[in-house]
Image (cartoon, rainbow, N blue to C red; front, top):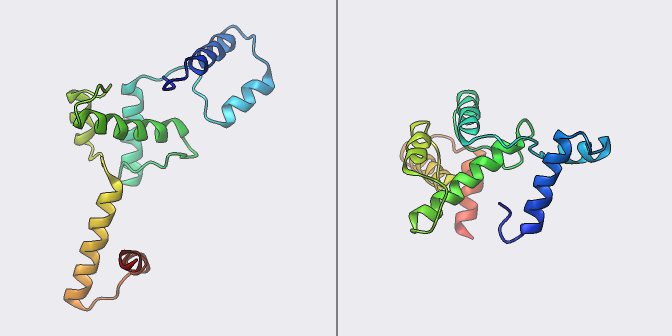
Length: 147
């Protein structure tokens, strides 16, 4: 799981075992909780359902990597994008056609940075064509495009 770090993978597994056997102290539990440690590994389907709830609440799949309400969800979304890139270039990946289909059904944004560029471009184009006021966000974006 932790690319190239078998010792860390084993240690993480050991922490889960110690927790289930109540042989880990309160301070260690508290520290692991603070970094969003997953005591029980959630299935892909469980994370997908959590993502659907997020989409319902926020209208998009751009979950911050350190989303305070659910840090594991932010990591899940980031991993799906990574696995998809691997899949696209023909490398071994844990994402399947079925998972891609399900994510596409909820409007998953595979490359949110590129999508935001086009959103700002469309906003600027509309502004130039209509004389409407340009938003601060679009103004800042325009400046960065000149750099």
